[in-house]
Image 1 (cartoon, rainbow, N blue to C red):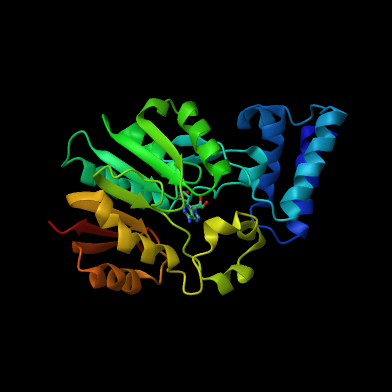
Image 2: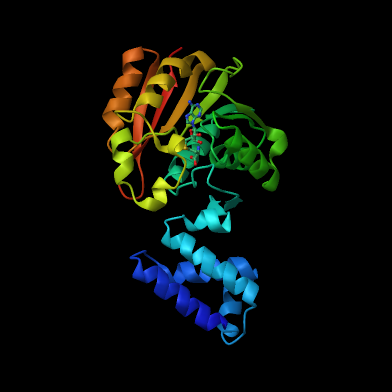
Length: 282
Ligand SMILES: C[S@@+](CC[C@H](N)C(=O)[O-])C[C@H]1O[C@@H](n2cnc3c(N)ncnc32)[C@H](O)[C@@H]1O
């Protein structure tokens, strides 16, 4: 089949299954296999593609139909202009999380030689972006998943910040050395357990432990609010991503400990509450 025929074939198959952006996804799948630029597809529409690639292409189109996110097929996601390897072991970094990273970068401008802890690091997107954009920062990045830590470490190498980051497998704060961090940042699992079943199948194909925030979605915020202050410097910052409907609950959890001050929330580009920042009381 030619490039043109393959794209028509893939687009039709994806569309028939009511999946959005069919034409774009069909093109990305093909580009990923022939390792060429977008322009190449346009200029060489009549080029015949080898049977080997055609077979792989059809398999990948079937994966899209089965609800596998395209990023797990191309093994890449861009985040804050950096590229991250992703597969089924890690959550795909989301654009909403850029709001959290941007706020941490802003906060860091007031500080020097800062020590940051990224808890629940997944692909390492937050830790690695911070290492890249905050000069002289020292970062600890942790996750309960060994596979996620392997991927995060690989991503640090890919983005040339490996020396700046210490990776650690840890169940929340269990293995974290008491380092007096200036900033603790986290995008923990925060979806209510019984909502997960109703999510689109692409999201359900992401790791369950990256999504499940327990019965009320707040399990991890409870652990974080009860522990983060023990690992923060006085006046240190706690920076959290939250679900669109969790602002008041998370603020209450933080206030109830009586350990945090200056709590505020910021919205994402869709005007949903998205991050909570707090400082440790002196
Ligand atoms: C929502 S994902 C966030 C990933 C990444 N920080 C991001 O923003 O793209 C949550 C991560 O928390 C990790 N996780 C789940 N339970 C954990 C636990 N008890 N301790 C540490 N990490 C945990 C999951 O493995 C997953 O990588």
